Image (cartoon, rainbow, N blue to C red):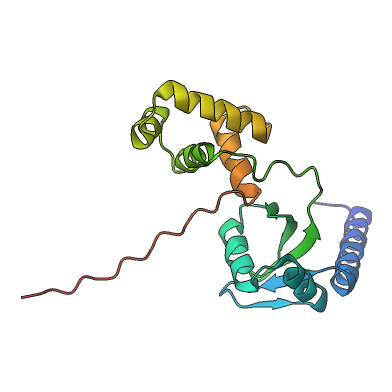
Length: 182
């Protein structure tokens, strides 16, 4: 059981954090997303998103893909801070990404193809067969990707690409029942 003094201290810290969050909503771009995908932007967020040339629906869709797994993500040159709320809603604070957020467009088209297949879980041999190249060439492309992302392995490269919004994985299409023909 936590002592009374400790409980009071924690309650005070929670109130201060909530006041800080309330003040942030008044001055920082913020987006609120309900579990069903409906969303609300404050005035600063509307301006921020328009300035970046993004569609709000696209932004919400990308955020929903990382919900529950990420606390922060990068999308183009935007840093998104995700805050889960009681009741299942999500508050997202939108900020300009720091200039050192890492490489965005310096992958070659082949490196990009290799990275996409890596994210899909293919082995080096499978990637080599699919792209009609040797496994050694795949290794060279992976080494370049690791160097450009500043990471040292497959999983870290995948997470870096996804977190930075560098690669967007398409959602699987829902299968529609086939009509029976006679």
